[in-house]
Length: 508
Image 1: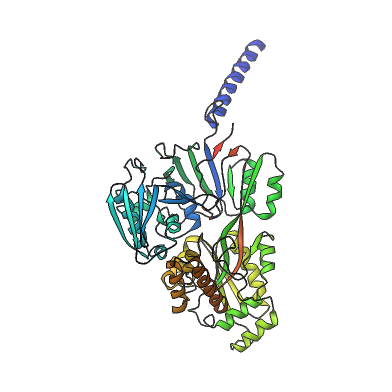
Image 2 (image 1 turned 180 degrees about the vertical axis):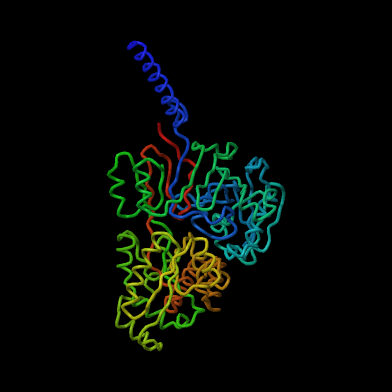
């Protein structure tokens, strides 16, 4: 009897071992097979899958995997060919682009000139992103693989504009309805859209016919993990393979973990405090200047970014971007000067206002610090935190008072135009709703001149004017980081924040 029981237990053990072995093989894609599913932890969920609805870093971090542009910037911010294999300047307002032949969209259609024309005209018609493209006056199809882009004036930033995610080339045949296309986007990028539930994972799969070669990572999953601490924990437990924007306080821990790796780079992203200048009280420049004197930006950088951010020096142009003109006008921390300006503006006892922020860590932390600093001059700040999509929509409509957010750009025109030009009021970026004819004209002149010295001088003049009028207060330039499992190779951070996964792979 004992022998029968022992034999039975042996059989059960062997069956269990086989099942466990099969489960292990299944989890790893087969015995000895390389891992091919990459899970990326991101702080913010995308707002749209359609890149031409509204500018959003959270959205573009996903859509840049689905769509390609005519031209691209590499990790060193150098222009390189993408869907256009070459181009030449025909005259001061016309550039000719030669398209790659045989490029396939995810629906199997070949990309041709009509898709390029349709995509860029769609961008120009979209109020959420079009401020960068209104200078384009015509898009001419020469033949199936040749397109001319004509600008109304000479425009020295055209190629940089065409690298932005808003200039994504999409399938004309697929984009029959904006709503349907947002739910089922079709591009020519390295990854095909599979699924997305609002607030849930975004799932993409490798496109085997991608013109640069099929990606090595076959399934790509973006998972929203709002708290930086939880993204670090996810790396430690192996729940996620790659995590963007870790807390500065966690970096040493990641560096000291032999199973993890860390990448770091200085971004072109500026964080700033903005004012809705259409609102009473905030429409007074003395109030805005008082707030500037009340802010201790060093403390904001030390507390919010743990000291790892570059001070903005009161300009929205980062040091590595052409046109950088620091310290045009300074507002050194001075509580008494701030109180004096408030009294001069008719608010000796301060006032009440609201500060709107999206529900992610940096804005939330910054809001607490700003709230405390402004209380020292009698300004009582109520912090309003909201879901990111609602935040972008509401501030685009001008419902806010103060707001805290960031702007990423790779050339001076797109940065300054987005936050200071009349063309960009609302969803396009100018949520301060401040502009002047003089600044508009200077930005327009700078964008069309072929004299780099003249452009640099005009950008410096704009920065001096806005530093005095303060529709917003630049705070700091973000440093980017990403943690990853040690077997994740080939990934590189893009200073513009929309990191490409193509080229990433798992090392056996």
